[in-house]
Image (cartoon, rainbow, N blue to C red):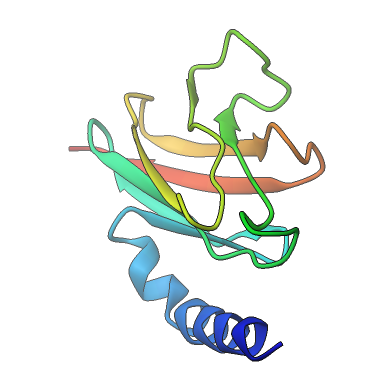
Length: 117
């Protein structure tokens, strides 16, 4: 129980700084939500899973674009579990705002802002 409390406290601290960190190309996953993300075209965005629970590995998530893709995704991370918590994905989309989703939890949506180089 103490372990869960520590993880939740850490996640709350990280999420309180999320808007500033979003500009650095990092997206945090917590409580079945993605924090807002921003990345420069051609750079990588790092998805980090802070989700606890669900046994030893925690709750897995797998960000992917476009929404609803299965095998023909423009980009997709490997499944992210607590323990193998993060993966980077190189973004080559034109500048704009893109909605992506979690391939494991289809109701989860996130937005990624891609800017010019």
